[in-house]
Length: 159
Image 1 (tube, one colour):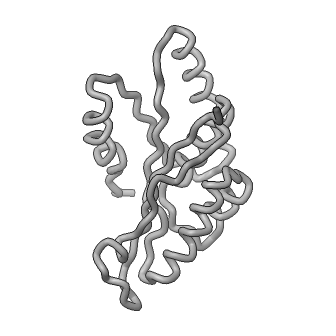
Image 2 (tube, one colour):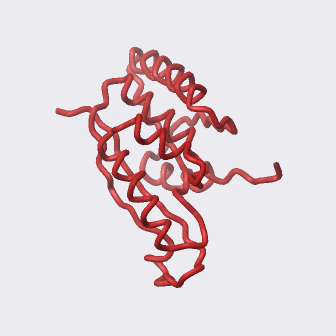
């Protein structure tokens, strides 16, 4: 398609700073089918179990913008629904929202795959670390202003 994938290069400096020396296995997908995301999740969970069994720590990361359209208010509305479903760890609602015709979340498959894999590994809680958008960051909230949503979350097992 000619689109340059940039999610890995965006995440790499943060991972290097936080983790220091680590090994990385990037998984990039152009699939747009929730069934593919679930199969990927199954494979990821198997690999994590295998690596954990030999004492390795594994971190799963999904990278994506949220909605990105020429309407600040619509981005806020659509993103909030996605953020709420992630915070509730409601995979059914999240899948429906991400696969809806109006969704412009470009990394929906990685999001679904990582959340499904984490659930298979026993994760039960999602903490939203931060949620914002380009309009809030720049102060540009005018009608017709191109706006991109962002969110960071941590998925963990309950203690």
